[in-house]
Image 1 (cartoon, one colour):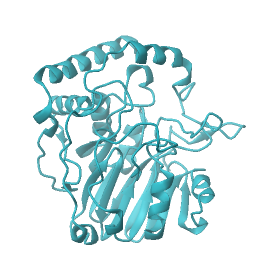
Image 2 (cartoon, helix red, strand yellow):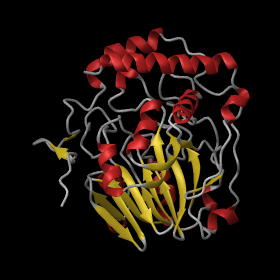
Image 3 (cartoon, helix red, strand yellow):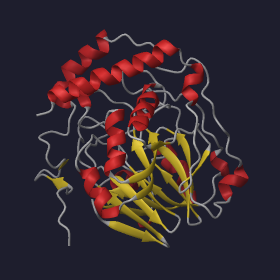
Image 4 (cartoon, helix red, strand yellow):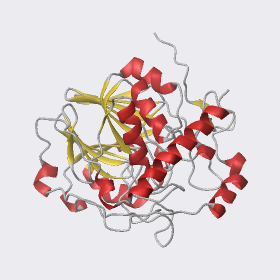
Length: 358
């Protein structure tokens, strides 16, 4: 049996923590982060015009078909058709990614479907308990359609408190698997943190996920900084036909818990992925970069490394095993000078990162 270098570790106080890190990131440099927010001039934090979106017909939602496919719904929410099953990852369908709906990051675009049109959902896969990944209203709206909620350790406590039946909740530690028919779901390591208030930081586990079926092998990153765990996941569970990799809401100050786009591409390569679909972007304003910058930087990094990058518009289907090329749709409404600024930001970040590494 292989011995993993990455295990879900908890302290005597029942706090989870990242293997190989002295801190789960963020708190130590709050003052520096605050200063950066105050002094940074932002050119395009949100889109100036509506984003392109393809409405998904109800009949298409209801019929998984014979080939595995995936739809971007926004941020890290995706709908997957695999082996005749319908799956959802991190469904956040509310107007804001926030504890309240009168304040907080507001979505850039509507959903590409009506919730009433969703068919029965075999499983909802949750990566961690942050508000932009675990949304109470969405969970409750979906509950009557969902057979199983797959969550990392202790995240099920939130669902039970909201009234989700205990027999519908499956909680997994890193490297544990759960089977549903022909599908295998494995909770895999990630380098992040958790918490929904000031008093519950790291009380629940965070995870990435390998979703494997006869029709394809899919990796869902959730949120993570770049770390050697991606290589181990690729060795143990890869290669992956499609990787859904966090690419957005990054900054050098919190790089240990959110990857830069260039690191996202490297993670895809470590995972032995065949095609990469960047997620965690183009829906909420959660950092200081321009809204389109994650896609522009990921595209440049993918081209440099000869990676098949997929950037579908919201609601467009992507075949898991034979995906078609997708256009850089964000460039249609973005000034050339802004795209050049994204290139300059990438060069600056990577130079700084190289200088900070031991």
